[in-house]
Amino acid sequence: MGCPGAGKGTQSAKLKETLNLKHISTGDVLRAQMAAGTELGKQVAALINQGNLVPDGLMISMLQNIISTTDQGVILDGFPRTVAQAQALDDMMKRLGRQISAVVMIDLPQEEVVKRLSSRRLCKKCGKPAATATQAACECGGELYVRGDDAPQSVKHRLEVYRLQTLPVKEYYQHSGKYVEINGNQTPDQVFEDICNVLKKVK
Ligand code: AP5
Ligand code: MG
Figure 1 (cartoon, rainbow, N blue to C red):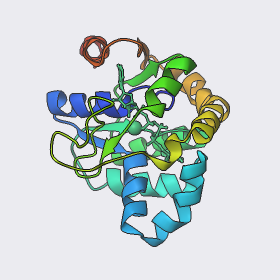
Figure 2: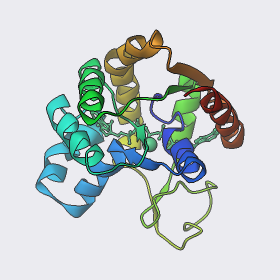
Figure 3: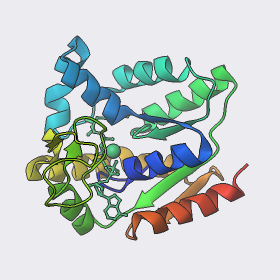
Figure 4: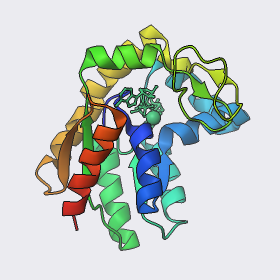
């Protein structure tokens, strides 16, 4: 978990290698649908670009489809984002005989979010963020682009949506014994080290 720009994608990419987990970013799945011009992609494009959430019913069935086709452990990046999604995830886990090991919240002050997202450019080919603000192309040779929802107005709205709809999910997990908070305002390697240290302690 974490607000827009907290580093969920960056840390998930590192963790999936170390722990041999499948990384499921619901935002990436939706953006792939948009890029492919599918019916679903067309349906959600305006909501995403404006910084609104996609309806719960759609997201829950999407996640159910992905999760039920893998036995591998997963990192959920960007799900659950509402209390209804958190409740649906609990039901799903029960039905599949699986469990949540940890809920990792990456904390980041709002000023830092705006700074990070206003300069983010992503690779069309490998999906990774560009390492510097000035490079013309990704290290892999792919073309760089700016996400539609990284426009300043959308970022402002995403932060408000996060405060109103996603922060209650923190309360949902806070007393579950699985919830941990990590300081996201450090270098990516320091954040990663902190996450690995807390994950060593969970069963
Ligand atoms: P999603 O794609 O999940 O976007 P988000 O939550 O807004 O988060 P971001 O992907 O922007 O940030 P991040 O935390 O992954 O940070 P990153 O690692 O990239 O969702 C997009 C949209 O899809 C939603 O708004 C909604 O419309 C829809 N959606 C998705 N899931 C949904 C759901 N469950 N229900 C309903 N709707 C849903 O890092 C950001 C930048 O900072 C990068 O440039 C990176 O290089 C840099 N950076 C990372 N870590 C550091 C660090 N430690 N120091 C300095 N820079 C850093
Ligand atoms: Mg992300």
